[in-house]
Image 1 (spheres, rainbow, N blue to C red):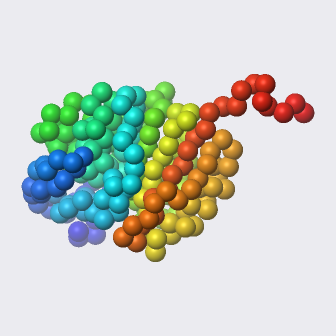
Image 2 (image 1 turned 180 degrees about the vertical axis):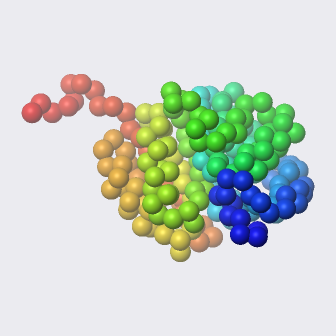
Image 3 (image 1 turned 45 degrees about the vertical axis):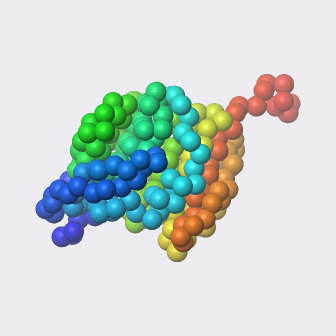
Length: 213
């Protein structure tokens, strides 16, 4: 990719637009991809494991695809939950453009593909689905998750897929230590060398159940 990374803000490598046949939300579709984005030739293995091991999304509210790439997770959410508002977030402008174009081609008017700061501060999410950019480095990854996981609605879940040999178990331990009050963290599924980690935000305890000092 000529020095580009899929998490580059503005890839300088040739765009090389291409059309790819994929299967999302039980449908055979044609999508537009390009060079300079993550997994441009197919739905990558991690995303496939994520899509196969997460429940149907909530039918309404705000749903987040964190690190959307050309859009396989966001498009799947939009197809399965046409009355929800899908936020497809990435730092890669080319990826966001592809997600917008793919959503428009499929008639999915409920997809907002935006930079991280494009999500209004008052929006909270009924689910987060992510194949996070592990290769940005541990500090960047932790900062990313610390920013977005607290924006889960109460009694809502984040689902993350991470390759086992890229630190899924250590990330799960970090998540459990970081989100230790009001959350639970566990491994929900394994497959093809990947782990699916579920982070649940629980409801606020009833006032009467809080122990008095």
